[in-house]
Image (cartoon, rainbow, N blue to C red):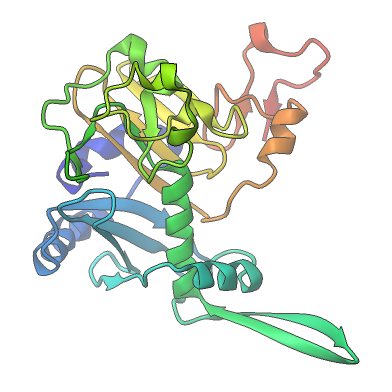
Length: 304
């Protein structure tokens, strides 16, 4: 969520519980300007907040000339002092997957340890350890890879391969905003090259260089609604509960923010399979199923 639009952008996602106190807003309005100047970022965004048991992590993201590859993440415990997150490597991802368990503590120096018994002639124990700062960096990386959203046409890829904001983007129409294929993952494409040639022939290479949300697996992992008197399109990820994206049709206003536990909803495929979770309506962790869409065999209309 762009820092310049933060005062009114937070109002668009408040229905998901993504709110900040007056003290936090005041501190962010001052500290993020300093961070942008000190690190020479072209843009600074409030990425979100990960809730911890002792303290919460506020995460910001700075963008350089290339919006996709030239970006750095920072974290703070008080919205004033910001520290750079370490760069994520494959080895770091493996360490976190083996050692980190449970909720975030809120202490960057906390060390997670996990012991694994090995039997090679004699019993031995192998200990995997990783700091919470590394876990935070990996979590931010995973959410960016799997749930960062931009509307089609909001970014443009130049002939040199640079990804930059499209200054001529005027927003999606209301009918376009109702279809998931008009929203894209803001990451390096993973499935784009697998498309058949007839489909690629209809694309505009400058703007159609990202993967679309409608092809995500599992199907139904996104909730799309219109809120604020049907003036704002709101997308919520059911895979990373707490990530909310907004877009005001016919305007360039869009952005996303994550406020949650930093834990992936691994049960989602089974919940969708069993009909326990309807992907159309999700509000504050409670799922309501419209009477017209309800399974006649179901006995409940609310799932907590």
